[in-house]
Image (cartoon, rainbow, N blue to C red; front, side, top):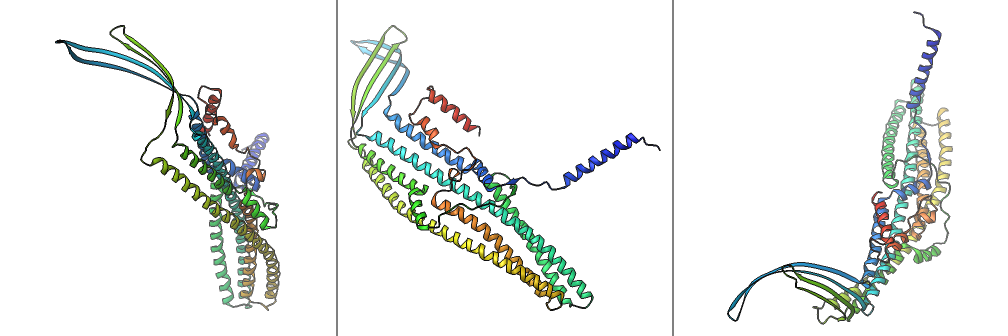
Length: 474
């Protein structure tokens, strides 16, 4: 059968394109290069834990608005319809009562003076907001440190897999060499069996390494919010001071855990003063306007009043004094907590620096170990070819080299994690300190919208409604 040349060319071209497509689909695509900064930025944007604590901060902001509202006019309305019925007897005459009344009323009150109780409560709420902001910073550090650990563990375990795969190929070569030498009588069956045993062990080690790698990928996905790409080696660890004592002094001043407890103590002291002021009188301006009409006739009543009202507790079953003692106990508890947190922060700095020094020393030692193990392995393998070394010697030297290379991989990962742990212990592991390419959360933005307790119909209230709708869509 004759095929036109043009049709043949089109057919060849289609086959070539199809083959190219199959080759492209079957070839693993190079994953996009990803830096540690990229992973940290993704973790910052993805974290549900950060979203949760931002919502808790907004709730604390609203407590300020609630406290401020006590100094604003309080206006209420009331309405009722009352049906009255009965019978009265006056001078021997019985008269039936059938009457329907409609009552409308508006009451207003404005706090004039309460010995500072409301102001104490407002200031306490503000201190709680500051404490919650510091708690949010502490959570941010936890999120970013977890991302660092996930990033380095993926790199560590991925390199372990590669190392195990290379080791497996090398042992297969050793096994083939042992079998060839056995065939010519240079080694015994024992040497072959040793190589076979080591091959089985290498396969097991590779399977374990692959399992660990998959676990680290899942941890990365949970911490960062997506699968890891082609993770590049971090170029430099953070620039850290080599003086742990100076770092401890910085941590005591600026670590968010320290700042949070300090604000909690201030809030507790203000709550004590508010509890003390609650035992004193309140002075309020009170006004009332009312309308009462009878539906069945033209009778009506219009009333209004305005005055100054002074109220104060006489006896409330010991509640007020118990409230003050409770606030004092909470203050004392927080002071003790500050003592604990201070020592904990200083301890964490010391431990982080000790781990960093040990990890860096481990990197130096592991590099030397790898260099020496590589030289020893090459030498033993050459000596085995000359018959002065056994197969067991070669396999042992190879295992020593494998262990040394694995130790170096772990030491390098541990050193970088330790450096970021130092930053976390000081209080400097934040998106701002690391200069991540993210839109950082502004904790004051929402507070500034709600601190004056705006109503829904006001300009601020409408802006708040738009903000809350946007948050609800995230």
